[in-house]
Length: 392
Image (cartoon, rainbow, N blue to C red; front, side, top):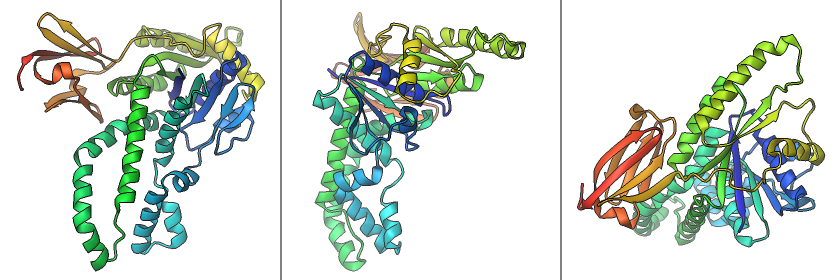
């Protein structure tokens, strides 16, 4: 069974270095490890000091890597969609070369990274897949894609397909607009099926977890708290926090005394706020962390004998249990205030909104025929009590 660990954090906190160090150490210990990036900046290759190809390439014994090229992948995997997009842009008067470039729309890197992740996990060729995610806002969008697309595919896509069969030929004849035929719609459906399978994979807390990388700074910690909330909303387990770039005790210059005092306070805040998650600590390095040797040494300091691919915390973000004659659904929403939370129900779905993010949670069979009797947010956990069978 392939283990998946994703790293995210505010831009500049060192998440790429932490991800690369984790992969390097795991490979050094004999674990067949693949490291990927969902960040279009492609800084992963810079961390290793090794060029990465658009296909998986071996970097060291037990270590493989890949640098995604969205345009190449669009042409190879979803040629039908790309051809249709280019045709629409050409019809709109866009220059042919510009149309080719614009057909690779923003967010495709994330889509392809998700489908790649599912494909690699299914091969059995790797024991561990390490994912260097984009900064936190992009990571939330990346991981929420399957849920967002499921709403469209379940409700609008069938109607779109029916309407397209009737209206599409007319538009093509009258206005010359390139319409999405069955090949394009079929490719879209295949893409969704792949993303849905990845959602199931990443929601399996025994196989996949996220690690938040922070620096001991107020703004960084605040963003990590929000990220933790949104990841839990979408059902993704966080199993550790990495406190990176901590001033080491060996720094004795009085110039840094104030900074060390502030960091000590923030480290206490991290431990308290994210409990029961373990906090892995890494001191500020005295040199650039580039290359396998430096990354392995950094990883050894970070994990301090812990198994890199172990599940470091087993808490599940979503649970259902029986309480007498009722059923209780619990959703962890750490750091959420009641004023930020909206709750509703539509048919078989529980609608949860926290801040700018909304999730339509499909209720399990045990809850679908029950009415909601009560709901409360207590200590960062939303508890929804389902009573006897009926409708709300």
